[in-house]
Length: 304
Image 1 (cartoon, rainbow, N blue to C red):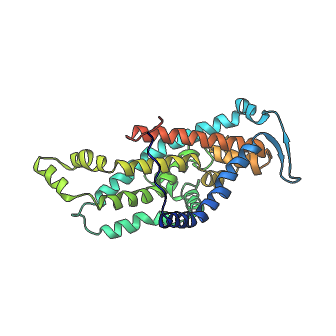
Image 2 (image 1 turned 135 degrees about the horizontal axis):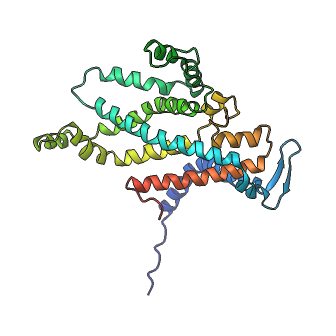
Image 3 (image 1 turned 30 degrees about the vertical axis):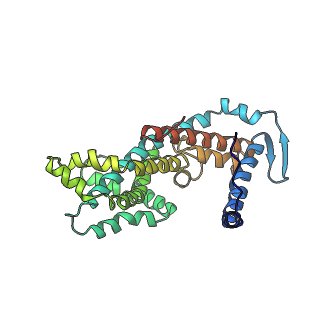
């Protein structure tokens, strides 16, 4: 016989209403800015959209069919994937190593180092991009230093050479995101018991052994967060590529990312909001799959 469900008391019912009351503002925001926005993007993906006259015309899946013939999309996916493949592991590794070093109690002046390392995070992305464009300009300080050291015979056109533009953005992105992730690692290392290191030292462990067998396993949940945040950020990279190329993705589409391509279709000269919605949905699906795979590789649940 199935047991009868216990009746909810008036006090429990009141607490439940109170809880939903506190959640209501957040639920309204999620409903308007997330759920409805996603549904509207799906609706746009099946229509030809004219934002000026506010007309939406069903186009029989033409926007989705265009995915198969868009050569610019293939180039944008290549650039974005290459960007994420290099930037995410490098920024995670550097942030972990710096945090590990700064967590060492024998190092003096740690607060100064933390402050200096964290400064790039306080600067806007647009300002950092302008600074790097100055540094790597044809007549900028980087070329000047390389020439003075006789490592190059003539200045390198980092800004307009297709072999260098995306790599310069990578360097800038790593330099600006490492401090943020380093701070997260440092906050977690504060709770790591010293007794674990002391026990390892008694067993003869050196610095590398302690990092490999104690610090990295202990920080695995934090590493998962850093990896997922990094993947999402790199796949959505837009502002730096936009400023570097003036919104064109040039030279020769070398800085064209998926986010920049979506912008070009939605608000640029291409003027295809419906197809831009398709690309946005595609990008969301790719980010979801890649983040779940990364979570799985780092010991999480991943895709089930």
